Image (cartoon, rainbow, N blue to C red):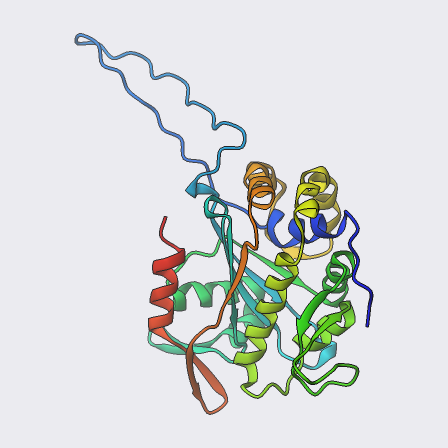
Length: 291
């Protein structure tokens, strides 16, 4: 097993990739009108947001996709909801065999992705979940392993019959290749729904296993790491997105603790397909999409 890295660059890279790059949204500006005696004065300039002030406008939603065709497995889809005001990250794995009625027609996330890439998969999730997804990010094997190598791996309870793993449910340290192998394992008992949950759980564990010393070093590496990582992935995240929300990122990781959590997408298996539960979707929106 690989020896876990604890270097100061590990967590900053992870945070930049999974969080720093994906925080988006706009700032709300207001113009106030002052009325005189029968005359109207010129509105004052909008008051700029104080540096470090975190608001509901910093929340965002993103679709993360891991596509490693050489593994002979379907793409892995993760929905991430980031709520910096509450110092909270919520991950939901979406099974690749998910189907739903969209505008009276049966559609699937994998079919949408194969037809139009990440934007089409994003549109499918938006319609099925009734939410807005702000950005997407797609990882291949090289970019995903780079993340894991820099992060130093993750300690995780593995319960799968995979060569090189302890199949007893015990905690074991996984390196980048093992993490990729585990996430793309096709023989989970509950199929794609379990694989999707496992992927989101591994990512959450990576984030939560970082210590406060690592979190405090994040700000020092923001700018450099953004420039490195942005060229490694396929994404519609921009430098402006990153610049506008850097203060929120810093606050969430400097002042938060065990900020990541995983939700298991409830649903029904229908032959080889998975139908997401509408009650789960309603609950998800009620608890994590209302400001």
